[in-house]
Amino acid sequence: GAGVSQSPSNKVTEKGKDVELRCDPISGHTALYWYRQSLGQGLEFLIYFQGNSAPDKSGLPSDRFSAERTGGSVSTLTIQRTQQEDSAVYLCASSPDRGGYGYTFGSGTRLTVV
Amino acid sequence: AQSVTQLGSHVSVSEGALVLLRCNYSSSVPPYLFWYVQYPNQGLQLLLKYTSAATLVKGINGFEAEFKKSETSFHLTKPSAHMSDAAEYFCAVTFYSGNTPLVFGKGTRLSVIA
Image 1 (cartoon, rainbow over the protein chains, first blue to last red):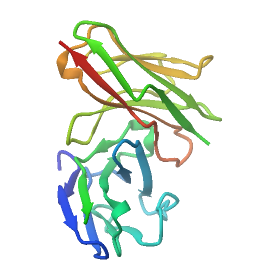
Image 2 (cartoon, rainbow over the protein chains, first blue to last red; image 1 turned 90 degrees about the horizontal axis):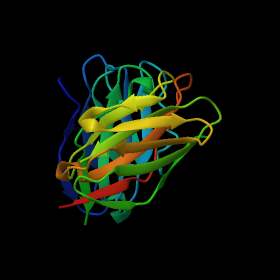
Image 3 (tube, each protein chain N blue to C red; image 1 turned 135 degrees about the vertical axis):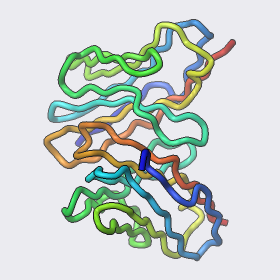
Image 4 (tube, helix red, strand yellow; image 1 turned 90 degrees about the vertical axis):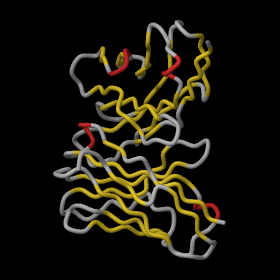
């Protein structure tokens, strides 16, 4: 597509439930990134996919967080047993290669855990 | 390890005044540097980038930034602020030869007063 698409745009879930966040990157972009933006904070790196290489999971805050990227395109970020501190905006970005080109960001998914 | 420091979480300027948003970086290898802007309830949009070419970089909406290696700085400027410039601005760093995702500063919120 023309841009990076994320769904849903807003998600309210009960504490303890699992959630899935979807990212559809720009066609042909080999790199895909997930970041988390909490109120008053900068962007916290979560995970990075580059082509067929093993993903860089170094930013995932706990084993409740996981992500996959199917067919080198769509990615799903899964948060299991959600906690209130997981409430944030989850941003996805893609780029043609490594970061030298700059990223194109989606509009994000606002997750609220109640 | 790379890092970015944005001085001032909130900057307020009058319409028509100079905009100066400060960014200092730390990198053990030559950096690639970026400025992004985020309008309310939207994703991040690339303003400009430095990737080892000209040290004075011009971006969209009249913004520019100058890479100063001796000062490890990449400050963002605009000669005359417009009301539509009110937004959150993020500085970010990476380097091309590695697989390190962009590292973002905590952001500076720019307010423009009529």
